[in-house]
Image (tube, rainbow, N blue to C red; front, side, top):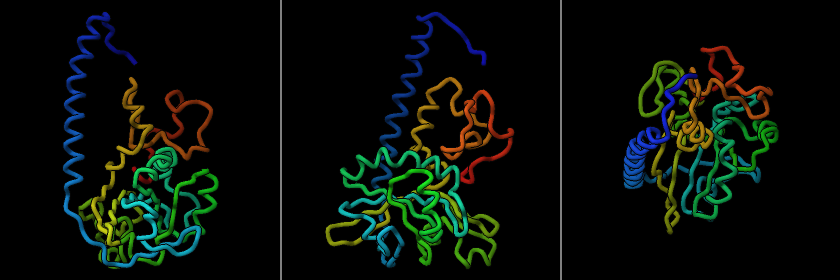
Length: 250
């Protein structure tokens, strides 16, 4: 990889010019976050029930003692033997922040469409501790547009990321955020899909500071389940042929 090499003085000048852009981006991101928090809410009237380690739990029970709930729509469909590699990459970032989130009025829970028992061997293999429940038998995934409804499959058109798509569709990733008030009423405040989850991927934030950046031909083409990396780093010997896609999230 060739790059321009300059004096320290020239580098400082270029770095200060870029710093001005970084500060402007930070201010724009703060404004965007404030706009997100100011979005209107939708009251949740449907009684969603999930299956977890201690049996059946309602949406309200997923909050625990907190008033805010972040749900990650983890791609693990009925009959699957392992989770989506991209969702797994993102989920590797949950347990660290969760040590702090749970003490700052936020509960973080992963939800998958497969029956609860089907993803327990994979969870054990990955060594994750975050709360992970099943939405099997409920309308939750279809209502939040991360699994196509029977009607969408029959019509051959489904909604994802606020747009309609042709085909039957399948399991898709995303985040949905909820708030519970003092009366126990629950509101849907935000959902994001596709690359909207990039902000939560700490490894990407580190890569974005490096000379090679994410070094991807296609989204997440280098990434693996964390127990399946080879000894050599992907930047030296690519694990997959260029053009193939490792992650169903991509």
